[in-house]
Image 1 (cartoon, chains in turn cyan, green):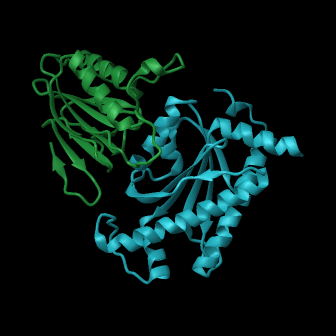
Image 2 (cartoon, rainbow over the protein chains, first blue to last red; image 1 turned 180 degrees about the vertical axis):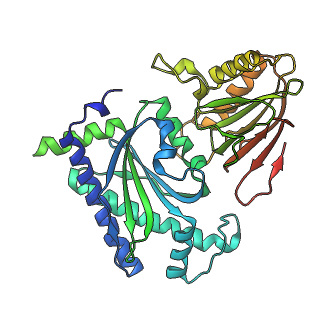
Image 3 (tube, rainbow over the protein chains, first blue to last red; image 1 turned 180 degrees about the horizontal axis):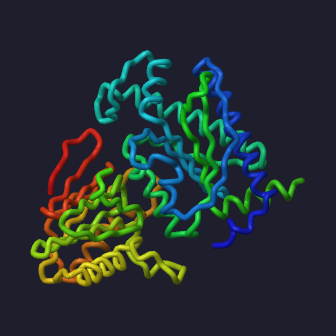
Length: 208
Length: 163
C-alpha cells in the first residue's frame, strides 16, 4: 500500500499518455475493420479499493459482454473490454450481417457472433499492447482473450478478489470508444499490477 | 427499487426483519450466505469475497469481506436483534469460476476456496446448511425474502430457481 498514493501528477500523466497511445492505436485498427470513424475520449485514471470496482465501472447490475485478457512476464496487467448488449448486437449486424435479438452464448447459432466479438476484442487489445510495447521498448506477453456475457459484477468480482488478496488497491485506466455519431461503443479498462507500473516507469524514465 | 429491498454490495452484509428483502447482485466467484431464523423471522445476507481475514495485511478489516468474519459478525448481530442461534439455518450461493485459463496455478480457484471456507465456518458455528447453489461458470443474483426464508436465484438465460 502507499505506492499508488505516491504517484506524482507527472507519473499519472505519463500513464494516461501511455493509455492514449494504446487506445489510439486500437481505434485505428477498429476503424479499419468497421470502416467508420472512431473517436476516443481522454482517459481517466482512478485509484480505488477492489470492492469499489463494480461501482466505478458503472451499471454493475446490468448484463454486459466482457472480453478479458491479461499480460504476463515483467508487466503483469489485465485488460477488460466492456460492451453493452445493444452495442455488441449492432456490431454483429455491421460485420457479419447477423441479426441477434437476445444474446445467448450457449446457443450454437451464436457461435460465430461470439467468436467475432472475441476477435474484435483481441484486435483492440493487441493493438493497444503493441503500441505500449513500442513506447516502453519491452515485449509484452498477451494471453488469448476470453469472453463472457453476464451481470457485470459477477464477471469482474474475481479480479476484485485477486486484488483484495494482494495490494488492497487498484489502479484503473479507463477509456471510451465512440462511434461516428458519438455513441459509446465500449469501454476499455487497463489494470496494471503494481510491479508493472514500477517496471514501466523504470523503462521510460531510465531511457529519457 | 422497492423501499423494503436492501442492497448488499460486494464485501458487505446486512440483516433485516420480516418485511425485508435482502438482495445482492451478480455473485461470480464471491459467495452469498443467508442465515435465517424461522421462529423469529429474522434474516441476514453476506456477500463474501475472500475465505479468511487471517491473510489480511491491514488491521482495520472490513468484516463483510471475509467468510469467517462475515458469518461471525452476522450471527452476533442477528442474536442482538433477538434471534436464537439454535434456530439458525443457512443457504449459500455463488462461488462460480467465470474464466478458465490453461496456465492457471493450482489452488487459484477462488470460488471453490470461498465455498469451502463458508461451509467450514458454518460447521464451526453449528449452523445447518439447508441448501446451496454453487460453482459452475455463471453469475447469480439473489433475493432473500425474510418473511418466508425463500431465496430467489436469478441468472441470465436460465430459469429462476427458488430455494
